Length: 495
Image 1 (cartoon, rainbow, N blue to C red):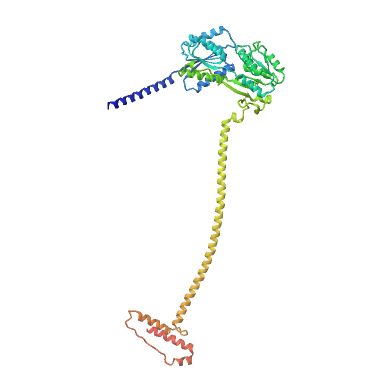
Image 2: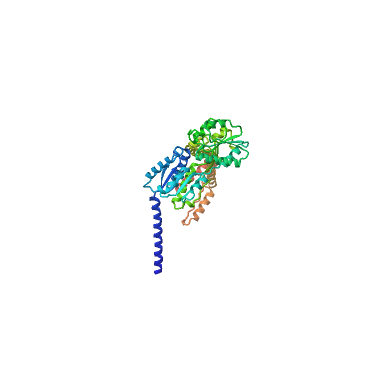
């Protein structure tokens, strides 16, 4: 008994402990806000930065955790100096003095360097997730540091050049465009090195020092079998700033039809043909997923750098049309984007609804058609049956009339037979001439009387008319017959 009580107590204690643990976890996930600070190197409106920010917030929208996201911009492209960094430092120190930052997401080099330098003073040494940093710079930033992981900005120059080679097998010249910013020089150098290593027979032309109009002129002077590789081009040597996408649009608008390949997804839609592209949105989403993993209790140092998941392979539809490239020429692992919107794309809800209604109507019409045909068939069948029944009725009516006529004829015959029978019977028991009962009638009546047990006494009177022959001879037989008839009546009266 005591053993049973001990077991029961242990079970109750286990259930209570599990309930407490589960409830505790639920209370934490509902009530505890996770604060993430996003520090962007550049300014809002820059396509690359906006795409990363969009990916971060999309990841947060898909998460079941309550997360508060704060966003700061260093505006490094417009103010690449320490004075600007100091101002940002003072501003963040003031803004977040009473806020516990759990994770920092830093996009691109300037923000990563800022976060590493000041996190111990501003954010209680919070772990860092970076995006938009090359592998070499990531290794440099994380040397002798802990609590840092992120998504490498690993451009796929080789696959982009393979696309160029697949579409243009006779390619002889590649014109590489990049600016003199940190990211531009880094990306341009990487592209040049990859081309020299992979495409030994291709003539390489670079333009990092040119004015944008000189770039346009150089492209227009390129010989046939040439292509352009757009890396990072934010401003030219005159610091003419239009922006990444705006610069590309300006160049493509003012140059001849020449294939231009890109390395970033945000460059699509500006006139470039395509390539194996880094997706800023995907980098941002992956960065949020890493931050969420850290918030769940995983050490940032145990999370490896991500290199390939932010790549997407695309070819622009309008650039294909402009350059006369057919769909079958595009490698299968490249998606064709920016296709003209069809009615299905713009109003797919209405199209699907209309299709469903149309299918319903077709089915309904088929059902109605089936039942209409069946109704017509049944109607014809009933008409045939009715016609047959009418014919049968007419035949029966004719047969009935015939039978009635036969019946009437039989009835008449029967009556005639009955009359004939009565007449024969009368003739049998009466004299033919006088119509009075004859000897046969007497015998029949006598037998009947003698067979009747109630008759105890019977008198038989035998009469004869004297000299009746004389009556016949003198008066004739007809008169004699009448005499006999008269005598018979008188006897009946007397009887």
